[in-house]
Amino acid sequence: MKLSTKTMTAALGIAGAMSFSAAMAAPNWSGVPAKDVQLFYPGQSSWEWVLTDHPGAEKFRAGKDCAACHIGDEKNMGALLVSGKKNEAAPIPGKPGSIDAKVQFEHDAQNMYVHLEFSEGSQPNSKMDSAYDTKVTMMLDGGGVPEANRAGCWGACHDDSAGMPSAGNSDRTMYLPKTRAHLTRQGGGDALVPADALAKLKADGYSLEYWQARLNPGSPATAENGVIFDKLAATKPTAVTAEATYKDGVWSVTLSRKLDAGVGFVPLVAGKRYTVAFAIHAGHTAKRFHYVSFERSLILDQGNADFVVEKK
Image 1 (cartoon, rainbow, N blue to C red):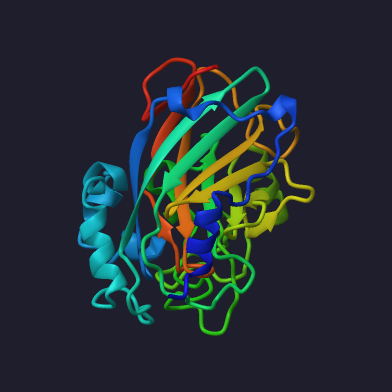
Image 2 (cartoon, rainbow, N blue to C red):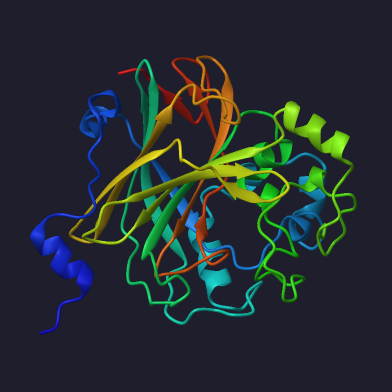
């Protein structure tokens, strides 16, 4: 019997654990409360589609957020979209429509940690990304991006981004709507608002931060992070640390960074409300061919939010 790479890795009982320094030692997750987050395949459902052709567009424009209507229905939505019957021009045969993840947060005096545990199921190899089997991403909004607060990742997903219906041959990355001079049903193109307007948006915190772990069974996790503003731009060197293990078909992934990582990063402080959302690329997929969650709220130490991040 021929074993897959993942099966052989699981048998060895190791997979891609990065060593943290003492200052960045990951928490003992067995004592941290976990919440279930379901991620689903979104197909070519863009921000512009949500505002116009989505059956709930009128409610959304009136102020109803995505999570308020759709949390709990991710599995059904993912199954429909991954099938190619709706909003998907290039379905991947045999791809599951959703992934269930258990998500935990914790912080210490210097760092915040997020932990995701999930099985990606039986994933066909899309052959889009030859470097990494799986990628795990968290989006973080510091309160300055209303689109993310209302719709998570959709605030940066447009009809003219790479692989979307209005993209043509463009390799355009994710971007935030207010950076564009003119936004239509087909997206915002490449024409930006004037430089002084861009500078004010950035000064007001109108940008998203992302943390990402890039994974191959049997290899150390690779960390990346960056910012989404007028485009997606990775930060070099990365401020994020990643570690991961793979065993018995389950990924266990921890991302972390300092609470105060300096200029350009969202400061993480007690009592402030943040928005997070998650994405998983599985089966060597890239760009839009991922699983996504709806938006979740987060607060450090105390308050009301989906995730209340306690200090260890």
